Length: 304
Image (tube, rainbow, N blue to C red; front, top):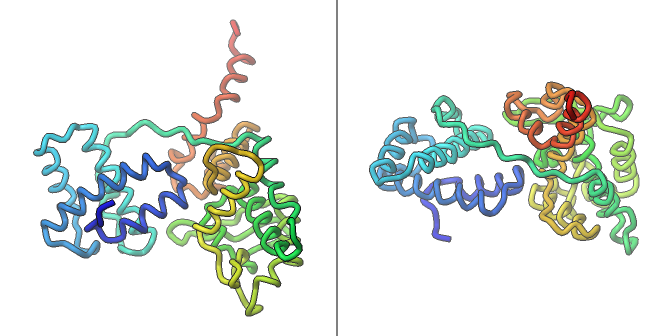
């Protein structure tokens, strides 16, 4: 892959892979679109993202149109650019999201993939029995991480940032800091509570080398776990229980939302739990809930 002239592109693609769980094909499309944008900025002698204006984006799209780019491809390029600037704002690399108000045609929503209940059950048991006693702290940590991801639907970055002080075991709530530094209280179930308490009692002390680490999830050096390591934990669990398709942390978030919806949860409640700013983002799970749609049809259609 050629080196990009667009600053922060590598971090953005890593965010899409680790945080959003996007496929390699989708990441490649983002990379190609934003490399073209980077080349345009290089010709315009712009090397700092803070110097990019909305007019630069318009000029880039006009140039692409002049090269004979199809309307569908132009729409996809604008989607890529908008996602990039949204990331810059969320990551505090820019103070504003200049592309937010730029309109682009709605592209078909991608139906989120999710695990079956049986697959989730197997995955959550992947770290139950460490083969060696020295692996027990890591296994307890990983078991707790999987339990929390599925029980709460929080993003992997939110779990990495979760502090021990933000967990209220008495009321079954945790204080989660999401996108835009917005805090929300997220409930968790007894299974997640037990997994976290087992880890806090019998695993985390062996990882917290300083005895003062504020974060719940720690690596083997006693530091805050990062998204890449969390990805490896989930991927390793999938392989251990024989799940052959690609497994990543965001898949547990998708599964959390889809399973809630399938069991009758209100879409607005799911929106609040997931920390979505707009209900439109949450509605994509309606498409994934095909079993419930079929059951509703069979129950209520007069000729079914």
